Image (cartoon, one colour):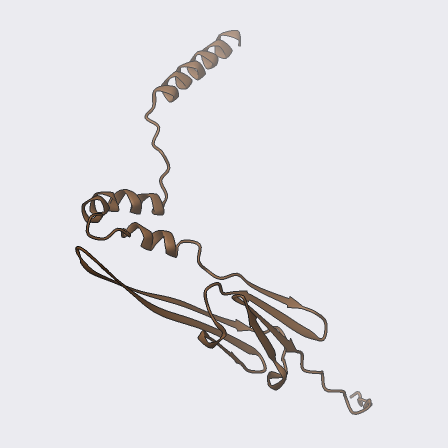
Length: 171
């Protein structure tokens, strides 16, 4: 019994020694892989285009707008953070049980320098489709857009009152 325990301890110590000598590989995520892949290209293109291709990934990362949906008893409130969008760039469509949000922004920027003209076009797009948990009165939905925050108030449809009770005949 004592021999088995000391053998197990020795085996465990050898395993720890082997583990400590193992090659540790860093865990690299997709953004870091993309940056590493693009680094030589960025360095080559830097004199011609000061804003590198790396910025495409960085700008796209974490840009999904926050949408909050709350039940407030007789109505729902939807709040969507859409930074950079103006109210004329946002479209809201609503039916009694569905809601669709679309936001689109296009911009073009041109700068002239001693090495020539640089033109930059950008497009920001957001689309969200929601099935509502209960029917709403689509004609009474109201919304505001201030400082890139969309807020919608969706009044719930009142349940139809039953026309009195009815006796059920049992067979």
